[in-house]
Image (cartoon, rainbow, N blue to C red):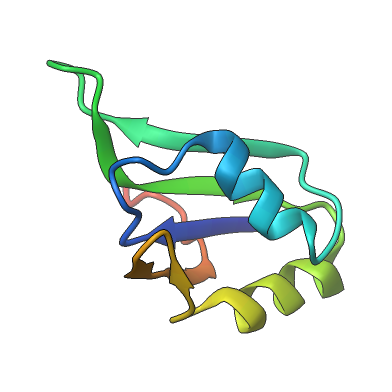
Amino acid sequence: MNIYAGNLSRDVTEDDLRTAFRAFGEVSFVNIVRNRLNNTSAGFGFLEMPVQLEAEAAITGLHMKEFKGQPLTVNEARPRPR
């Protein structure tokens, strides 16, 4: 399952995000979206968890939980509109 993680603190790293989600199961991919001009975090990212039940548990367990000083927004990622 592809997962959206938003409202990330600017100092959150991909390793931080992977560690938080790994508490719920296997994480196969993490990417924090970065500003192209200055390479700073855009405040959101995407993860992939191959096991549906683990991904659903991570969404439930982390949505609106404080992470590095900010409440996370976590939900299933929706495909980009064409």
